[in-house]
Length: 144
Length: 134
View 1: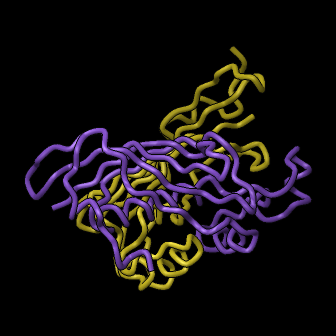
View 2: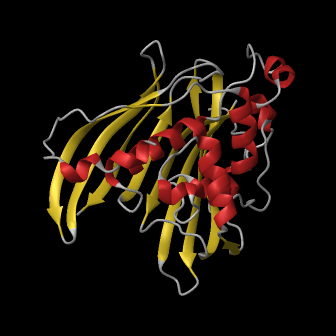
């Protein structure tokens, strides 16, 4: 399980501009989109029903943008631990379809000492198997 | 400028506070759907950073066609993680409405904020969504 090597930021020297380890997710599946719809309460049918998606001009269902954001949330938990996350801000810049394989990547923008630890600002994104960024943003973690 | 699809007179409109009881099972279900292997999330103890998306609160008089919605951006600020057993007073607010001309013609932007506080008032999270209606 990924979590057995969790919190790599806490065991590393953090340097501005440093590329962070990557987290590759399993391919997005239609079943996952149905599960995510149920778990999140986002029942917009463009994510689960091909007919509805085609009616609005798509080729078929597309993933919830929030699913790719949740992948980045998992990435932050992996990097700093689930208690470390203070902010995650993203823009959804490209669609994700079933079968796409997303990889979470990031880079340290800043690291400053503060009471209780270090505040680390990260530029991060999820990209697909064609190396196209789909969800892009930044985040802040506080690690001890 | 064209008229926004939502009247600007609704800016500032907010919901009543809603008490949300965070359940361990809801956290687990969310982590499993995402494939989040963080052990404290899979066990349902600590909510993943985007879990607040499950807290959906309608803003009075704000309605739009779901098929015309694009979710353009999202932010979460966490004062601390959301945990199983939390009782959060949550509120949604329409923070802004404006139009922009884009490739697809006039687009209406909505900025929707959701905040959650402990019952004693301490802030726990704020969410800020940028939604485009076209």
